[in-house]
Length: 354
Image 1 (cartoon, one colour):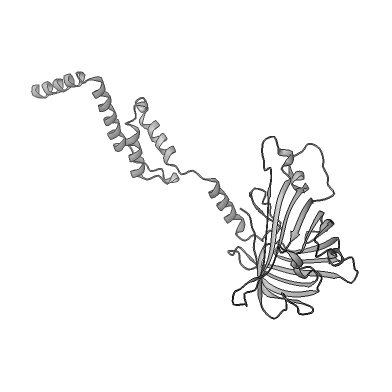
Image 2 (cartoon, one colour; image 1 turned 120 degrees about the vertical axis):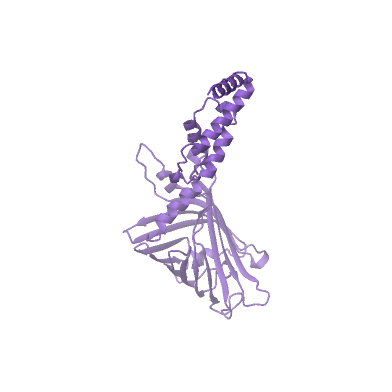
């Protein structure tokens, strides 16, 4: 008994004589082992494992700034450090997954949060186009791939001090015909269409204390050309305005009026064939199937053109839709704007936005 008491007194004396820095080190080590032996409750709700928590605790107790921290405080700190944080991408993916399950497609979804947004039509199709007289490049004897890409973005998106200019946007669309039947697979034609416009619909979407109204949805200036020179060159510049009116949940109408301000040397009579306005009617069946019918009339009364499109989703898990299109009239391709053509195509229609 006396021997035990002497040993205890000796250990106490040694502990008292420990230098300050050794004492702090001993305290940290003691705290670390205490944490390891503490209640091994897992943070199951946050997905934190014992190994990860213990490793974090051992690391934290070695920091001098944590000398005054309790075991519970350090455990809470480690839990906060190890808890996975939900990122914006994860929230978007989760939201997308929830909205895509057993929900109909939205043809007019709000993509204002995307920097680059889909614009006009985006599709790729296989088919054939034939000039009425059978002349090249669209003789109708071979199959080709036609695709169209369209995108737009704000020139001043949410910039401090320039909020009034946020509806000003740049748009670009392109249509191309790819002759895959030829050995070298050349492109028959490209039509380029850059533009700048003011989007009144976005201006109206912003909160305001006063009621607002508008006559047009878009007002802009656009250039359209096929990028060729000399006698194959086709180009014109137009000022335009559009307005979409909805007569019911299923029916809507889009009107586009333009005024040509510059005509290419080799297509000065293009307005005789394409006129100065077009009208498109849209029919949505339960926001699932869409039918579009576009018509335009040239200044010459017999120059009528129309296009009929059918868009049908294929699957909930496929990010595209089945697309069929029939065109009859003038101007589907600029190179043959003054020749009556007809075409039938089928392919895929897809959204674009990132």
